[in-house]
Image 1 (cartoon, rainbow, N blue to C red):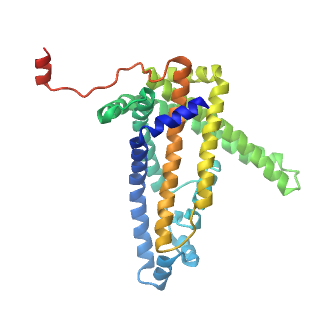
Image 2 (tube, rainbow, N blue to C red):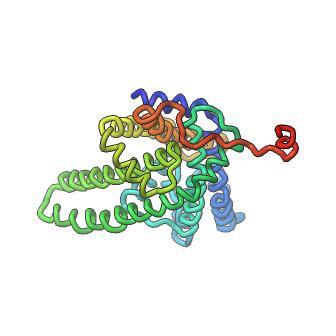
Image 3 (cartoon, one colour):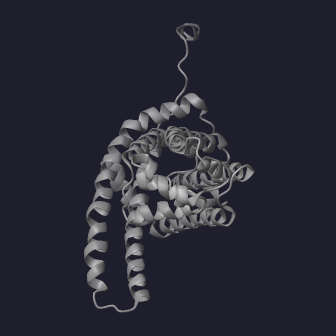
Length: 330
């Protein structure tokens, strides 16, 4: 728990990183929102449904729109409202539900942005002191191509998990396990057990790649295969602490989701709509904060076991001085 508490302190000492992560999330989602707004405006036109849609939610019209929509428009359904959106995303993740190409493309851009920012973020948390804008982006640039290679390895692992293991578990093994089951509740618990098995494997992969990033940054590693091997070795030698920290972080994430489930607004127009938007953005900020606490806590745990707080192998990047400054120094 010391690593979790220290991770929280490190994240809270750098609020600009949380704000920047939220800004990136908002900017990436704005083009999708603009396209969907245009589709809705075109379909509503000057109809009476436009007035009811502005004052609340017209489920009949929403169903009508969904029946004729294509591409991004198929995502406009009641499950985007309030906490239902969280459950819909979880269901899509666990059941490999496909998304429109536009969302997949924007998600790829978002992932690429996080790959670029990850080096600067972990470097800032590892040093546990301000690195300024130039230091942050210098570290981001140094580790960007290294983390791209790491992302290729991640793609292979997650491709196996979601492309091969998931279909085998839920399309082949699950039907065989419930073939002679007559009680629906039993079938539900069998599927739930398979979800737990699959979730544990995904969590293990995520933890390995997280510590690979941490070791790459703290130790200035260039080989991502070496970073993965070092990550596995660290987790094996410190399995209790590493798993315990991951579980504590997951409970923190679950607490944020549970809080949002309590306060998430329903459908409504006017001030309710803007209140719902504000609460939704606060939830996104909370979710990003937890993600950053994951990285900061893992960095703290690694440094406490194999190095020391604030230790990094690479020197802190400094802003290049002008030739005149070099001449004066000479």
